[in-house]
Length: 290
Image 1 (cartoon, rainbow, N blue to C red):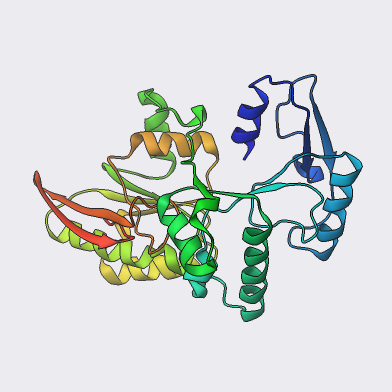
Image 2 (spheres, rainbow, N blue to C red):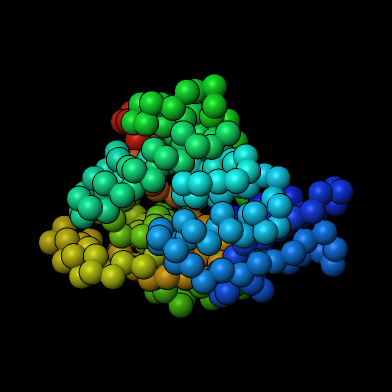
């Protein structure tokens, strides 16, 4: 969202912009000297207070158009609104939100947002289809805009930087990389089993998984030990953007085993196993395993 806002502000149009931000994010976005005002709000995300405070701010500043970068819109909105909905994960993958009350609230707020929005933005045709499938959205109302890539993630070519990162995390071989939080749909266990097969077929590499694992770390380490691949598994935990950029740059392959993601092209990704120069491919819906 930071990149989107800064890019729009850099267009230097004659529009006036109001950024409604939590207090902790007030200094996170670089804004030009004129044409932009920042209004902080301490109303919590998904809170009842948010539903009252946001319309009050919109009226006070006489806002002409609201863009909400998340699926929440105020139930009473005094101006036209555009909402960005990246996916419908908690409708498609209920196990990711075990609380039935949480799922009910999610469906209610999502349904209200798509009906009240004048336009809906989403990341892919796959997500557009899911909005239509799960929420009955008119497809004409949905615009697909693929996410851009921040210049902060341009490849790192400096071998010293790449080697220092490998040493920090104990990576001794060429490595496969996966980044993501620990959730059932992320399918970390499936990735470990596929990686074991890769090694059994003659592959030689490490598997680096970056991201906060919490309770999942112990489970993954136990599974890796049971599969006999523990010496090849490197769990980095949370990494900052500069390290993440280097991790991407140094990897031979990026593996995405997730069973569901919003940014999927046609819902089909390719599974590729490379052993001694021989490439084998299979097709699965919504999954990429190396």
